[in-house]
Amino acid sequence: MTDSIKLELRGLRKSFGAVHATRNVNLQVREGEIHALIGPNGAGKTTLLSQISGEITPDDGQILLDGRDITRVPAQRRAAAGLARSFQISQLYLDFTAEDNVAMAVQARSRGGFNLWHNAWRDQRLREPAYAELVRVGLGERANVRVSDLAHGEKRQLELAMALALRSPVLLLDEPMAGMGQEESRRMTQLLTKLKGQYAILLVEHDMDAVFALADRITVLVYGETIFTGTPGEVRQNAEVRAAYLGDEI
Image 1 (spheres, helix red, strand yellow):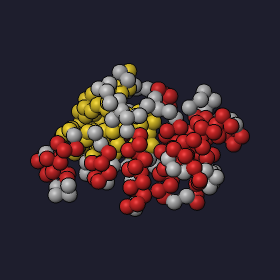
Image 2 (cartoon, rainbow, N blue to C red):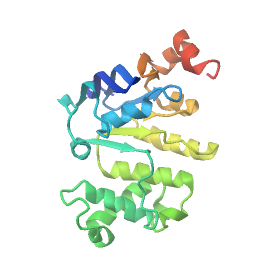
Image 3 (cartoon, rainbow, N blue to C red):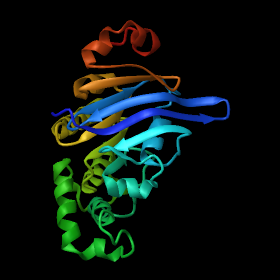
Image 4 (tube, rainbow, N blue to C red):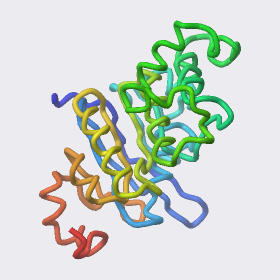
């Protein structure tokens, strides 16, 4: 892993009336690292991700992608620039197969986008890379299964395959273990471990076992403010973090 900064937040602020969702957030995600963002419910994690992905415009501050200021760049152009968000409210097409969904993600990274959806059904230039991504996340044997018939954990794997199909060097992963059982979480942790070093990943997750197994660095967000950033070992030992969030859990 190098020290090259792929994603940087500088003084990011967002308020909704009197509620300060993010307050002067500074954060860096380096090339090849998994950087976890943790904090209690209502800390502002999802609002922060929405600002990074372009769904919400910050009131102040900067968002830099590979050193380029994308603070006011529309969401769809951020994806084209190399930023992919996954594991949010499901955007899956339930009546289509797993491979159909990934084929459309492959098509989305091209200039044609979704204008000619039938191409995703027929074009081997889309189907072959789509199947390859399914194999990569362990869903190769489920390629022709309708999404509505997939288990919850398999749908999460499919969302990861779609994010990877966009070939974005920076991934925003929003609670990939949410709703999973112990075995499903273990499989997802293994998948994400294999991605370490290949992408710059900002991971929001409540499963602390997964966070401490995966993260190179961790930032703790409380009431919209970052109170600490450090290695997993440093986070475990920090008294302020334990008092604000971890308690005796770790």
